[in-house]
Image (tube, rainbow, N blue to C red; front, side, top):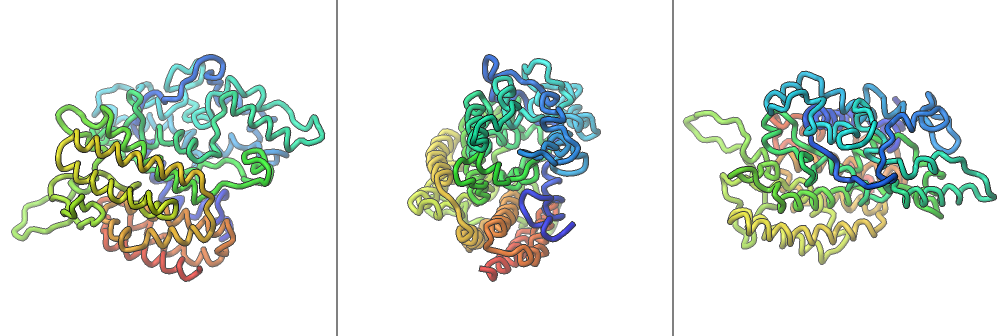
Length: 484
């Protein structure tokens, strides 16, 4: 594999990123997730047609990517047996492996390949979706929307007038009106992805602490990184014209990352306020930081404290977070705090104040925590809108790397989940510098060893050491900073 292929977005990702993201994707699809996705529509617009409707050799079923308008080998990429790009097609098949069977026995749900608790996210056929085969796994329509209302227009020919480019653009807009999901919009894409990669209010579409206790891995997701791994197309000039109109813009990876962080946190706070926030007499531990409680525990003459203080969890009034009370999982909140000042200094200040108030409320009672979560969610929603309306430059990517590495943020990287998000964020930002021409491919390749060490530090949650991770990420950041 060439250095160029390793570094560029849209091509095969570098080995360390693939290994880490494959681990995340494999864990997410290797067990029991959840039930019917929440986006159902009535009528023809809500009719699912299945992967076979996209598989013709004149559509997306070619063996080589030699199509004139699009590659046309997208189905083959989706089915790739060994890469992260084929993970969605394997989603149903993994329900028959030994780990999934083990989890199903623990949960008492029978065959996981037939259980609604699993099929909602492991197969497009998870809900009442007509004749869509369950073994399609997560097919085209799970991401692009039910095709009944737009597939005939989608595969109709173009070039019948003097301006075929505009005709393709108009056809795309028509398809959107007919129910195609506008995945080029980062807010829309994030909303589609988090239903399964984070959770929703839909019955069964949520990985509870009980499901994780049965053996399901924790959910981890970063929108831009996972989008790159699942991209089955190239963003050429034609793509830019069809998706973004005159000027042929491309995906803004920094914006995609920032919006993804905001949407994930927004969803988390929304679910926390709902009935999902409790399970029986207990709080729903899914929302809390696993590693604040899950440590190696054994009798010893001399106490050994394994936790590391997190200054970002200081409460309103400045009090330190109380030992023994699990704090909220703030992995996305840490990254959002890093990006907030770039979008709006006023909202950044509000985010900090409402974060402290939320942490404080978490130590009082559930009604107080729910009220504080609603206030915090208002700020997060405003930031999401600010990110979605803003274009990000290569200079902004450098500014965000600096923000992630400032003491105010870096000192908060004391837990495994937040550190995962940090290394994925820095990786995404470095790639955006390459794609914008701010950093050469060769210079970026020279930083890969630092990035790899940071990924290695978060490979195993049981082996995670905050100080080692902070040192590895700091080395990568200093190398990036030297390229400015």
